[in-house]
Every structure is written in structure tokens, then in C-alpha cells.
Length: 621
Image (cartoon, rainbow, N blue to C red; front, top):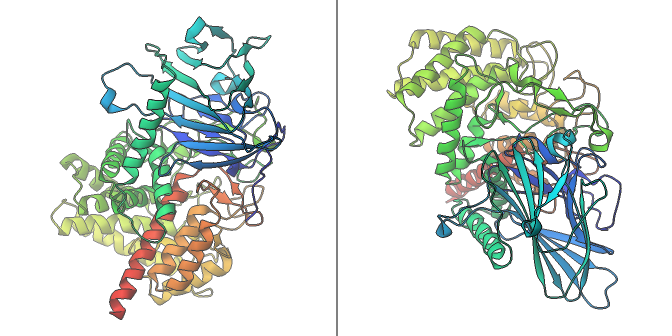
């Protein structure tokens, strides 16, 4: 894995995708670079319009930078078991050891101080000079609506600076002197922070409501500390105590941060149009909620002991899917809206000139048969482990099962959202089988009433199609599409879906085939180039690499599974974050970042390893 650049200077070049850290408040999130720059922040929620988007255009996008105005070397970490980020800039030319400490958080109000007025959103930044005076360089350049809106900053005396866009209001309150640019669009500060002093910058946001300006000084210190303690208290509830606890807790914290607390929805990533192939057109908006990983998400939350998060996610899932019955959409927004039309932002250059820059996602209206199985699997797991599903919820699941009966013979775009002529994807058929199998199992347990004969007949027909057309004797493996010899990493999931056991000869043959075709060390491609019919290169996929670990652990190949998992831990950035994909040559993150489902995959793999280790100990006892 390549080492990150450590020089901190005014650099016009693009940072690496994994040079960013993530902060958030379970409503929205911001990406902070090593250079102290907030370069992505959408408001009022994850998929709202950006106010800072230098991530996608260095000149137009806008940023909020706080850093030393002299050469310095940054080192960063999260405050222990929290999502509060601290960057320590070691001054290079100082006569004595000195540093600037920059602490960034999206504050979470302390319930002990309620009731009181608080901002809808607050990005709080604290700067401390340690060891010597530190010259500061500050730039505050909000560019609302993906840099499409006209900007004019207004000063309200000691109350700070206001950026108004329609019914959005972003206020900056600080005890550091700033000056307005000649065009009135930006603020600049060059100021020496005396040794031992601490100052704050508070950016608060409101939409169509009363603006609240948060106090600084000791009050800001309390908000920062309350936020740290809130995250640490949440982390302490994690039930995993295995050998990889640090990575598992960081993954859980990331998934929690990317969960919209007002609905329970988990977004795929907080970013849009970070390229899967830099300089190319594989640029998608991932700030939405996909159904394809619903069952893995529910299992991860429940296995770690986060029942409230599983309850909230299932509540959102059943609400959102009920809005489009009997058809399921591929993705929804955090409120359950199914229509998220794709738009190109032609005025933005894109990350490293990767065009087009897209917001919205055209995959929302594809036919993807796997999502029916994912929803039913999630509900089954949730119900089996004590979750409550209403009578209407169970009736909805049966309607989805009937939909599977009428649709499974159709080709689809698969969970990979292939943008081309639909095909018969084996994984999609297996998910349809799993949907009916779960419903029949629940019916046997008396939880739900189903048309049993119809479901049994269709389940058998699906299995026959999979065995005759989705298994290729020539390569001794299940394959990506019917009557092909192509590899697809989603087939690592067959044992988890209980379609067949991990030790079944056909599954063992599939493991060998997939590893031979798709693995590069511990890294796994979801498929090979040209399968998706798009120009550009395909890179190893984060969650697929963890799926391979899960399958190996289930099949008893524990030593190889452990070795792979520990290698994968080395591909996280210095903060423990994973992107969507990993460049196999450089080890750098590729695609939208961080990717919640890569972290769900890590949790899944760690738990499978733990179970396999426990089983080995029991067998040897």
C-alpha cells in the first residue's frame, strides 16, 4: 500500500481520495482534507445540495480551510472511539517543537443542557497553538447549490457572516479576525494564534426556520466534548470483542454516521461523482439508500448489539418500499423518495477532470430482481431475532413474494446496475429463490400466511434454472449469467443466502473459480472489464474482498480467510476508512468515499471469522 503524502503546503494539485477524513452528525457529513480544508458538505442532509465542493472542482467548488501559514507536516486521528477528527500540524521551521491542533466535529447537542435553542446543523472547528505562536491561514468560500448559486457574504457585526441561498442560511461565527474579499464571495484570515490559546470557528445552518448562532469559548468547548462523549458512549455498546475490535468499531462508527437518524436510512456514501476510474466517466452519485445490501446491514447492526439502529433501518425499509408496492425501486433517498433523476453538472470539472459530474442516479428505475430477496431476507432475519413486524408489514412481504413469482424469469440489470441490455444474472435468481424460501420458512413457523403450493413450485423452478443454466460444468462453478463462463463476486454470497452449504462441492468449485478469475492477493474484483460495457478500467471492490473472506471462513479455510482479512485491514486509510474500490497497484481508494457497504462487509467478515474460530475451538475441545 502506498504511503500518503505528508507535506502540507498550498498545493493546487488534487489530493488522493483517501486523504480525506469524515465527520458528521447522522444527518449530514463533511469531508476534511489533510490540509485542513472542508471540501465537501451537503445541506440540510446527505443528498442535499453542496455548500462546499472543491472535491469536484478546485476553482469553483468552494472550501473552508484552516491551516498553518507555514510549512508543516500533518498527522491525524479520530478522538478515541468517536467521529471527532483531530489534525496535528507539526511546524517544520519552528525553533522549538510546536504544532497547530485542529479539531473538527459536527456537534451533537448535549441532552443534559436541554431545553435550549440549538442550530439545525453545526460544523465546529477548534484551533490550538501548542509550544509556540502559530501563523494561521483561513479561507471561507461557500458556494451553494453545487456552485450554481450567486454568493454574497453579509456581515452582522459580532454575530458573524451570513451566506444566504433561497431559504438556506449558513452563518459563520468566530473569534478570529477575517476580511471580506473584494468580490464579497469569500473570507480570508492571516493571523497569529498565540501559544497556548484556543479559538473556534462555528458554521451553523438553518433551512426555513429560526437561525441560531452558537456561542464560542467555554460553550463551544462543552459542545465539542459532549459530541466526543456521545460517540464514545455509542461505541461502548458494541458487542464484538474479537481480535479486530478497533477496525470493527471504526466500521460501526462509520455506518452509524452515514445513517440518517430522522428516518433510519443508511446511505451508500456521502459523496457524488468520485470516479471509479479517475479521468473517466464511471462517476455516480451514491448519497442514497440501496436495497441490495439491506439484509447484510440488518445483520451487522444486530450482531454488534445495535438493536435501535436495526429497528430504525427496518422501519425506514418497510416504509420506503411500501410507497412503491408491488414494485421495488433500486434505491430511495433518506426520506423514502423513489425518483432521483440523474443530472449532469457541466460547470464542474470533476475530480481529476473526471466527467461527467452527476447528481441523482439513473439506476433508480432499473429492474433488479435481487432487491426483492434482500428486503425479505432482512425482514426474516429481523423477525427471527425478536424484531416486531406489523401484520401489514407481513402482508407486504407476501405481496413481494408474489411479485417474485411473476418476475423471476425476466432478465435484469443485477445488483451491479449494469447499464445495458438486461441479462439473466445468476445471483439475481438466487435472491429470488431466497425470497420465496424465507417466506415459506416463516409460514411454517406460523408468522405469515402464503400461497404455499405456488411458492414451492416457483422456488423449485428457480433452483432448476440456476442448476441447469447458472452452473457451468466446464469451469465447475456457478457463473455470472446464464449459459456463460463469466465470474461474478456476488456468488461468494451463496452460502450466506443458504442456497447451499459452504462445503458443498459445487460451492468449493465456485470458490476456486472466483478466486482464480477475480482475486489479486486479498483484493477481489466484482467482475472483469467489459462485463458492464462501459469504457475504462474496473478496480477491486471493497465489499467483494470481504465477501471472499466470509465465504472462505464458512468453508473452513480459516487460515487463508484470516490472512486475507489482515491484508485488507492494511488498505484502509490512516483513519480506518475504506472507499468503494481499491487501486490494486497503489492501494489507494477509488470511487465514492467512504463507502458504508465496504464497512458493513468488514463487519460481516470479522464476525464470520470469529464464529469459525469459536467452532474450531469447540471441535478441538
